[in-house]
Amino acid sequence: MVEGPTLVEEAFAAGMSFIDQYVREDYDGYEAPGVITHELDSKTFNSVSDTESPRGIMAVCTMPPPDDFSFLASDWLLVLDEVSDPGNLGTLVRSAEAAGASGVVLVGSTVDPWSPKVLRASAGAMFHVRIWSVDSLEDLRDAGVRLLGTTSHETVTDAVSVYEADLSGCIGIVLGNESRGLDPHAPVDSWITIPQQGRSESLNVAMAGTVVAMHVAHVRR
Image 1 (tube, one colour):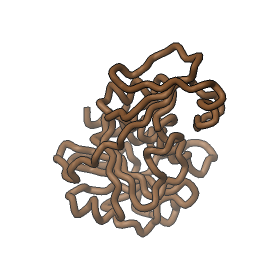
Image 2 (cartoon, rainbow, N blue to C red; image 1 turned 90 degrees about the horizontal axis):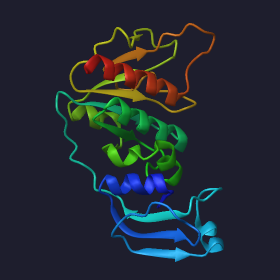
Image 3 (cartoon, rainbow, N blue to C red; image 1 turned 45 degrees about the vertical axis):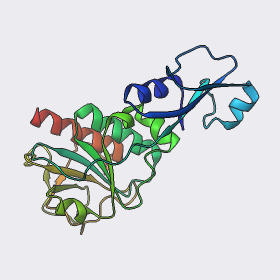
């Protein structure tokens, strides 16, 4: 389910396959062209909406099939291991798209990327980024991706600053769960960290992922 004029327009622009779209009786905004449209009274529309302040349009789309799980030497990926908050996932997908990442890989029980909250947090970026789901980080290593784990754990003593790390080749930037971070024993090839000047122990995963993604984009442009 895609809800709101911005997301419906982004989904259509990205070539998503629409089944139907539904508009509230007082709606006067963007509608996806060529899609069967049903008008609903305000009470009915608002009752099925997933938002507190419905924007007047929603559409049902089919989820796109996954891309081939193969990568080029020029590819770089944002890898999210057990990220559980929809807002964080949506923000990270948005950052990955803005930074020009080749795609986003979801590991283990990471939250459903097509949930309404993720779609809204991504501001439509979900429709323009390749998404894969894998069982473990080993699946990526088997595909030839060099994994750089992000950490703020003091127990990881060999982490280097992201600003000094080797970011060449086919790489995956791995971010862990919001509360636990990435397991210090995770099967990554090397560890990176974000140097901090203040008193905070670490950054929120969405903030950290955005900082690293934008730096990777700068280095590899």
